[in-house]
Length: 136
Image 1 (cartoon, rainbow, N blue to C red):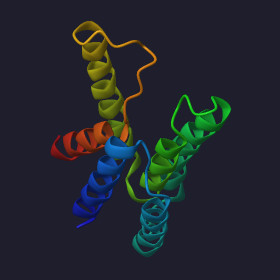
Image 2 (cartoon, rainbow, N blue to C red; image 1 turned 30 degrees about the horizontal axis):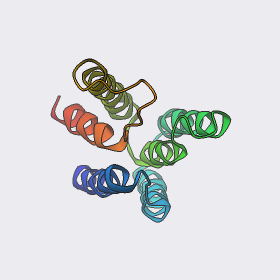
Image 3 (cartoon, rainbow, N blue to C red; image 1 turned 180 degrees about the horizontal axis):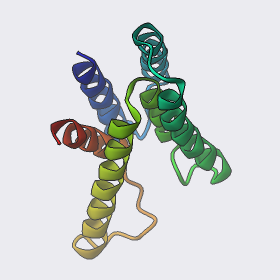
Image 4 (cartoon, rainbow, N blue to C red; image 1 turned 120 degrees about the vertical axis):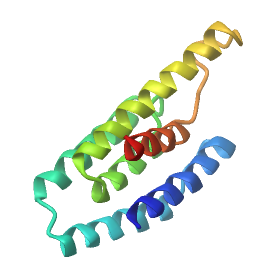
């Protein structure tokens, strides 16, 4: 059930990120709070919550420090995902998502002649990475 919930959360935010380069903080907040509640009720170890959430917070800090070069919304999404996903799935999703985003960036540079300053939405690649991590 949590897999479907996560896919729907990432799909909704992927659509928003792709269309308007924004994510829904309301959805991220709801997902994060429900992830905390799920973690409490299932007795999830605190380390399994803090590691993914900490990675999300580092992305959030990078967004603020880079003045938007790294999307702040991506940090909020990653922090919210850290509240529900296990560390293993979270790291797999993040690595695959970043790999897919890097591959797409390479295609944009080599095939479509875009510059390296071209912005791409990250959340659709996180969705693909999550699906890949769950199917592995």
